Length: 281
Image 1 (cartoon, rainbow, N blue to C red):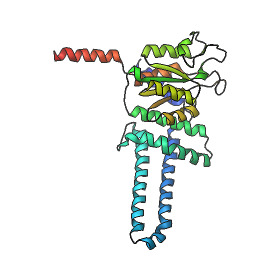
Image 2 (spheres, rainbow, N blue to C red):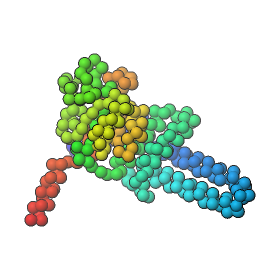
Image 3 (cartoon, rainbow, N blue to C red):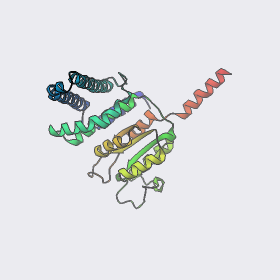
Image 4 (cartoon, rainbow, N blue to C red):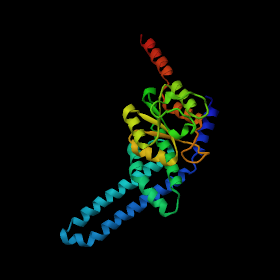
């Protein structure tokens, strides 16, 4: 694929998210400041009373609060720098988990208070999560990559049952499944269709992938990213011309681009390995 085509695709994938990164950055910064203020408040209230228990008690609590504030500030700063620089900084290897488990629920609550739609917050979160996954700069063997698709990609009038065996597809190309099957065969990765969170979790447990390329709406993607942590999930939003959960679509070139980003090219690796062996001999 030419460099211009790659740049075009990356811009197209990025523009498919309705929310901008600055929404996530603004919310996470404000949320971390609020958490710090709450911690300070928790320290101030017992400060007077603690002195009656022990002269050093209030200072011990103050030290604990200070450390908590520094940790929260570091986590937020490292995450923002990670997003802006598109690489891990300040020992931020665990930041993705922190944002998934702590910051997203707090940001959702805070965003709701400000009247920001959930969908917009989730979209921003998925976008940032994708960049954090990309910043890890890892590629995976094809057998460890799972393409996880929602059942609503299948044409609603199709009588084939694909949930337990996607190869039951007759490849009529009236929906995206045939194209996804061709991509999975071309790259040698797993392809599965889930009708809900329970089946998706069971697929993940059975296949034990190292990375998941998931297609879904904002709600399912954000909950799936949380459910499958620490397995990295790269999300691609589906198109919903008929509304939610009915005859949805996905841009196959976006999925292909994601596969190119994360799947090891074993042909190239074998050639490199053979060349290294020949050189050593």
